[in-house]
Amino acid sequence: MSGEILQREIYEQPDVVARFLACEHDHIENIAQRLRGRFHYMVIAARGTSDNAARYAKYIFGAHNQMPISLATPSLFTLYRQPPVMDGALVLGISQSGRSPDILSVIREAHDQGQPTLAITNDPDSPLAMSADDVILLNAGPEKAIAATKTYTTSLMALGLLSSHMTEDKVRLRQLQELPVLLERTLDSNSVILEQASRFRTKDHYVVIGRGYNYATAFEISLKIKELTQTLAEPYSSADFLHGPIALIHPGFPIIIISPHGSVFENLGELVERLKSLEGELLIISNNEELLAEAHLAMPIPSEAPEWISPLLTVLPGQLFSLGLARARGLDPDNPRGLTKITETW
Image 1 (cartoon, rainbow, N blue to C red):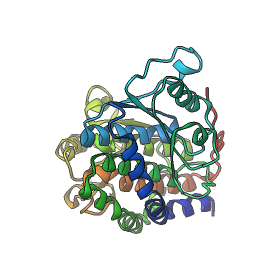
Image 2 (cartoon, rainbow, N blue to C red):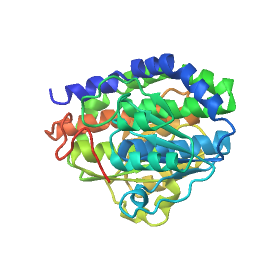
Image 3 (cartoon, rainbow, N blue to C red):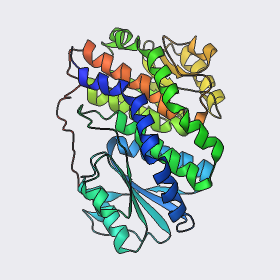
Image 4 (cartoon, helix red, strand yellow):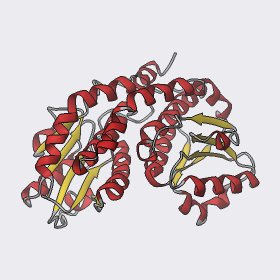
């Protein structure tokens, strides 16, 4: 069966996250202690899946650390050679391979400007790891499928641990320790999606909607659909979607909605009612039974998951759906057309 490598790596994620916690928890605590008080905001350089992890960082560090997060514009460092001044910043590079020259250029410029630098990567011998002052290793093991899965969830875990250790928040640290079990339960309850996705094989476009912490999830799921299934999928926040794109919806139009319990739940519930009136086809990721009952395809996550860590769970049904849809279309999910595992951009 095609996609065996990708499927294995998706199902490895509970063990990979548990290993990451065991290997990096104390290390990240030490990094947080060394960095505390040395910066006022963070600049993050990332591309692709890692850029979606950076979107998650904007919410957790903003909400829990009251810290502004800026996403770097690497072209200013490479093509234009006019990098901004980064006084007062911690500069973080996120890259599973650690080999993209544009991400590396941001870290090196920050070092030249005398700013503290940090890398999150899966390769301890990569140029990114060698260039940063501190390194958080993802410990995900070799990721052989082209599409990133386990390095994405471990990147989110790394950011969650760093944020929690920065504030010495014992409640949040304890919640992170519970994630491997919640990941396992999410995968178990959504295994049927691998088969159920086939009924959507004739759809040629999707909208993926999330808000708040799961704005990043909307981008990551839409990326997986695009790269694995050769299908157009556009991510939106629920707020932006109402400012025009909702005009796209017609009967049968598939919309993936990420709506766990939390601050954005009521807002997304109202959007679901509006989309039902437009006869859109709803694929819903949630831990609310009443909302899941409204779905044409329900994708549950554990009810006890707090909203701030839900992106590690909500992305899993999206990974399984993309894998199942690729198989239904006769594609090779392990080797998507036109992609390589390491993408070097300038």
